[in-house]
Image (cartoon, rainbow, N blue to C red; front, side, top):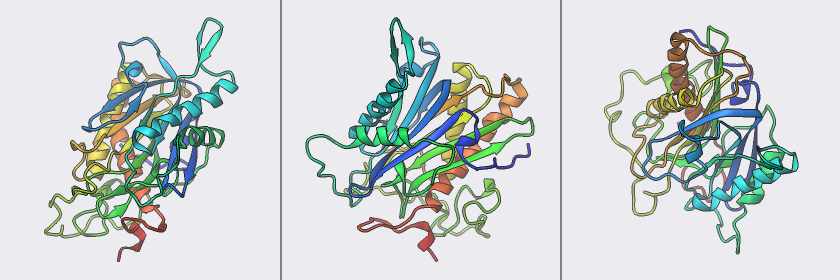
Length: 335
């Protein structure tokens, strides 16, 4: 299965999607929004032990609502769930939402990561800023967006490094496009041992996160479990992401795609899915290709979901930039 990156190498290579970011550098946090031009079939899979979510029950295949209008990834732990309300406000102003009688209800599931101990000033007063950050991110949504220390990735960290917002896309031989978006805030490590080499290296396309490949031979500490687990930081985690395709999928197929994309976390983060991560993947199928996949193509699609997500994880950490009071250095500072 040969693949190449899409023209932007972003999730927005999937037709029908735009992405917006809003960042508050004072609190070292932010929100990221995926807007669907038309309602998109969606699902979710949670494999981490400490998730923070909104409106995820409706995404199960046996529940009524078939499609959604937007997704939100946000910092702020449980406070960040407010970001979806800001996105709803934008969509309601635009007359977008699930039609119920004379009302339209924007369907905006979301997930949050914990970035409350990253050196930012969290003394924001009575109400947290995430509703306004969600509104700002939705207003800013477009086909092009930055990676690294921005949006939901602003205050993210991994073992020993700043995390960040990552994205990647792949074009399959069939012509199908698949894209990933992820805010990388893992308990574990994205690099092999204490080296600069990314675990995701086998999937890299065109030197998109440094072009270092895997170290040879593998260092003696490659399989050493390296995490942020300590009294101060053990709960300060969660990697949240979105996998999207332009194929027409059922909710059950979208669920399977979300499950497959979790393999990308496992390929890029060691360890992943711990009791102190809330690891989650949303899946979106925009249907803009007008095609439904045959089983062989769907198998390829699931494999591409894992490899594309792994690349997005590495790209998010690779793109991180430094700021005052950071608890960890950025990848680019490593020698």
